[in-house]
Amino acid sequence: MIRRAWRNLSGPQRTLAQTVGVVVFMGSLGFASVPLYDLFCRVTGYGGTTQVAQADSGVVLDHTVRVRFDASKARDFPWEFRPVQRTMEVRLGETNLAFYEAYNPTDEPVAGIASFNVTPYDAGLHFAKIHCFCFEFQVLEPGERVEMPVSFFVDPAMLDDAEARGIRQITLSYTFHKADLPEEYAALAEPDAETSAR
View 1 (cartoon, rainbow, N blue to C red):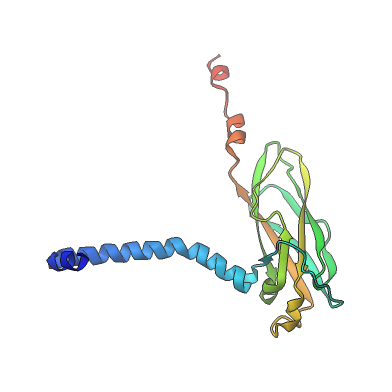
View 2 (cartoon, rainbow, N blue to C red):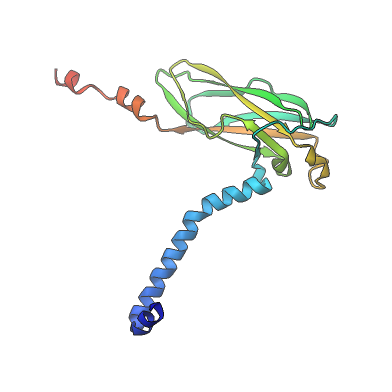
């Protein structure tokens, strides 16, 4: 039926149909590219993307690496943000807990969200986070200070990876970016209609 309809189209109609088909196809690729790229990064550790683990590794080796913690923020983001501990010597497979501290020095609530990566990039495939605050929406009240935990381990399989086995230091970096406040905060910030009318 589709072939018959295609044959019945004139030259300009076929050209239009092909153009629309190409646009729909390219739009579909654009829509799918973000989740596919994210999946690719998680599977391969590309670009320093870390792995996500649901539990401890189950195997702990005596071989150690140093993990360095780095904190930064977007240009106009007002929070103070830092790692509580700058470095940690960890055994491969051992579950570790580190903390980052955030402080809102302003007189209004501020929302933020953190992105992350590890360097060298070859370590991304072997750095597994069990729990972290990355990509979780955070709101700090005026003057509020919080400690945010990250639970992680470095996979012992790193020693079997020819490109990663020589790594002696891994840097875990978080960058906070400003986010829009949730609706409940936005509603509190708006003047009350009855108060405004008085």
